[in-house]
Structure formats: structure tokens, C-alpha cells
Image (cartoon, rainbow, N blue to C red; front, side, top):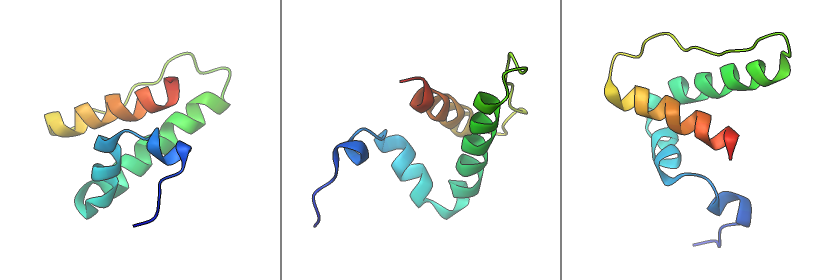
Length: 70
């Protein structure tokens, strides 16, 4: 097994697991794109996701956002 880089070690294990799950991968990546667009638009003061159908996906949205804050 290859050693992880420092950057890879900083990624939340929950996000790594969610990205490896084909059922959740596209939703997680979509959240990431939305957050990146938000950061690139200085006129947008707030970002709100549409309601997610499960508590797991709501939790994932918080973890994705937290990844960008830290």
C-alpha cells in the first residue's frame, strides 16, 4: 500500500468513503462544484443547498463545506 501524502491525510475519512460509494459520489462532487462556484463569486453572500432527502446527505453537505473552511 502506498503511503499517503500530507494533503491526502488531511481529507476527512467520511468524505473519502462517500466518494468511493458510487451511489453518493456524484452528489458529493456536485456539492463541491457548488461551493467552488460560491467562492469564485464575490457578489454571492450566502450559499444554500436544495434540501437533501436523507440525513446522511445533509451530514455530507456539512462535511464538504467544512473541508473548504479549514
